[in-house]
Structures are given as structure tokens and as C-alpha cells.
Length: 393
Image (cartoon, rainbow, N blue to C red):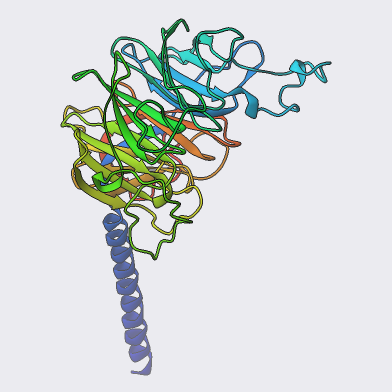
């Protein structure tokens, strides 16, 4: 009897263990399922773009744009490369490699460099920015450029071959965030083809969004946070526990228009995205990673390429990720990326754009100095925190 009793106890104990194991597994599966969401899926393309010719290197890559042919344009800062990086360009050369690439570069869909140009030219009829910032290729094929340090108060336009077209604003002439003739270190440009208007995130000194006639550069309207009149009062450092600031902090880093005529404004150091009508009427806002200090979390946005632009992609250069939002609710669905220097990782992801197929292109500033492509793989089940989206992961 004692033997049978021992067997019965053992069998019961084994059954309990199996039940506990199955229960734990079911709980783990349920937890994993609960931590997933339906969202766009991406894979990094580690082979894009192709290597640059001429032993060229990129400095801080501070703007990215896509044109009507799905060609990708970037602007970078030549002067952010160190003498050690550009040994062949020193006088005398300290080594056989390397040199800075020209500031503006165009790549085809395969990642091959097609064109490169730009930079200050003595006697030119334009004032090249002291520090390049932001790039846009409009519906007429014109390339727009801003600048964000020192006396930069101008926006430039060129043909795709680098021929000067127009300049709006004059370096050193900025008066305030209510100046209607100059900018204050403008960060980014977005041109609306339907109304032929340019939206300027203005920017690193001013605290506003400006809308221009895209042909003449005439100021049509402008506004600050919540649609308020811009105020240049120093708000001091961002405090995540303080009431929401009634003005933008600098930099105002993006102002992009959706297909249904809402303007999405990156109030970068306040960690918030504000939404307005085309006329500057405040609609709503959302905060992201609100405790982020310093550079802030809301750097740039791009729209998904379905007709409704269902999703909004947000570059977060402080937390080293791309966030995927529901555009209608601004709900954060998922994120991809991580800090690092390998493909699919980021160091200061700065600018973001999508091509007609829904692929994402990102640039990195500071020591990142890079352009990356993330291939759109459709909408499906993804973790809320995807990490590095390596091919076949």
C-alpha cells in the first residue's frame, strides 16, 4: 500500500508540475500576444546606399527628401568631419584617405549616387547657410534648403543641378519671431503642391511655423504653439513636471502637411507633437517619452504612403528609435531601432521621409553621419518594441 501511495503522490506531483508548466506557458504566450500590435513592418537594407565614390565621407546628415522619381536627396555638413576623417584633404595631406563629399547628394532607387553639389561660392548671388539644415524637393523639382546657426535667417531654392533660383531672407537681418521678412535659423521646409505654399519650421531661434507663397516667398501667415502669437521669452530648461509650455521651445523642428490638411509640428525639446489646421488653428497634441531631457524626443515626422496616410513615422534622435503612430489618434503603436552603429541601429536619427512604395529613409546627425533605408514589408503583427529590424528577423 505504501508503494501504491508513493506512486499516487508522485503522479499527482508530476501532474501539478505539468499543469503549472502549461499554465506558465499559456501566460507567457498571452503576455507576448498582448505586447504585439498591428502596424507597418520594416527591414533595414544594409546594402543601401552604395559606397560613395572619390573616397568621400558624410558629415552630420541633417536633411532628407524624396522627389517624384523616388530619388533620395540628402544634405550634410562638410565642416563636421574631423581632420582625422579627411586626412587626404589636409594641407599637407596626412594620409591617402578621405575627403568630404559635397553638401547635397542625390541617389537613385538602387542607392547609386547621381549628382552632388553645393556649398559657399565667392561672389555667388546667394548666401549659403552657415550650417545646412533641412531639405525638400518640391512638385516643380526645386530643391529647398535652410540653415540653423549664427546669423542664418534665409531659405534658398535651387534647380536639381544646383543652379540658384531664389533666396528668401537675409543673414543677420532677423528681428524677432514676428518678423515677416526674415527667418530665425529655419529647421525644415515642406511644400504643399495643392496650394503652392511652403511650410517652414522656424526653428532654432524663432518659435513659430511660417507659411509662404512658394513662388514668391511672400509671408502669408504664421503662428506659435497652440496657435498663439509667437513670443521670444526664454522659457528656461524643459521640466517634464511643469505645466505644458504655451510657446514652442527651440528648435521647432518640423511642420509637415497631411493629405487631409492638418499641419504636424515637432516641438522637439518639449517632447510634443502639435496638430493644426492649415490656417494655424490648434487641433490637438500628444507627448512622447515625456521625461526625455536635452535634445528631446520629437525630431521629425513622415507619413505612410497609403491614400489615407494612416500612420505617422516619428524620428526620435535622443532615444534612438523610429516611432510608429496612428495618425488619427496619435497613439504610439510600435517602435523600431536601437542605439548603435550597425545597420538598423541609430545614433541621433534626425530626419525621416517615405518614398512612393512606403519605404523609410533616415539620416543621422552628430557622430552618426549616415543615411539608411528601411524596406516596407506591409502591415502585420509586430512587437511594440521591435528593436533592430534586421532582414529575416
